[in-house]
Image 1 (cartoon, rainbow, N blue to C red):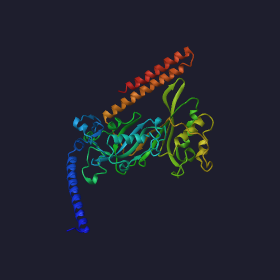
Image 2: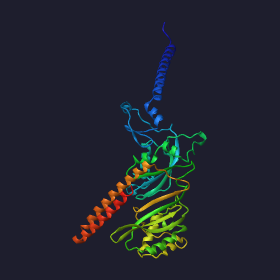
Image 3: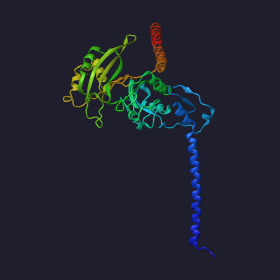
Image 4: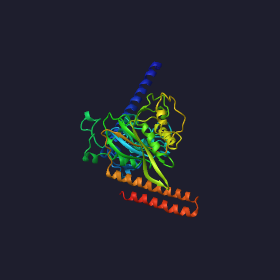
Length: 420
């Protein structure tokens, strides 16, 4: 007796359903087995136990010290910490130092590489201090220094991984703002950990816990810039007179690069404008600097101010030119002039209320050694450059100058040695 086509289709469908059910059961068993293995994974146990940072074949603990792992752990192909969402985190401010000559500015939005910011986030990811991604970190920066500009006091704020947990869930975002010694010893040494992986021209110099509503940009009370220059034949008195005209509230649209799309208010407050000697000489020349302090600054404002100051110092303009440029009714459009070079400009410091940056003794010592080594290298390079300069001078004159510069280098190196 032959079966109908409908019956054959039903039997085939039942067989297919049975096969699918068998496959589902096998997958569920495999899933349960994998979940069991994952819960006992060595990397998870190690993270929960010590909160270590794993990078490649090595691990770094909360104090930035290398840790040894057994061979079995190293050979595990799946030994990756990933983004450590399960770790506690705290909101902190980091104080940064960087030499900007090789960077395309601080901020990384311009899609140019390298930037200081991009190098910092590479270090944060490498050390597994970043909990989640940048968008979830509530990141803010105090200033956007331009290409070639350096800083000894830039500040950023963001959430970072912590060794400590809040005492209760209600205080999870604003906990630990006052740190005692016991708590400090138990926390990650952010300065030391980051400085071990950052490039040589970027360093973290301190950290501080801050409240959740803190913003490195908008909580800043004042910023101070320094601009270094050789005195040459500049008229210091005329420049001092001109610089005082900047102090106070003024419209600085004639002392900046216009950014009409983002900026609509060009009034800024300058607290002080000073000139001072840096106690460093090259033959009869002397190194000086401008010190400009204010609540906030416009795009390229400092470099434009310095450019006009140099015109006054050279006698090309009188100090009264500042009054004319600050009078936007009388001078509604910015005159054409070239900005001062970016290399001598430094964001010296950023001031915040109640923020006291922390740096452990070990981190401070390592930072001191690093900077001293760099200073010695630059002094030797300067001596070599000066030696090359002397080859262009008459022999007797060059011999006297050579002794002078070598004494100067040795004196500076001895000053650093005495700081230990």
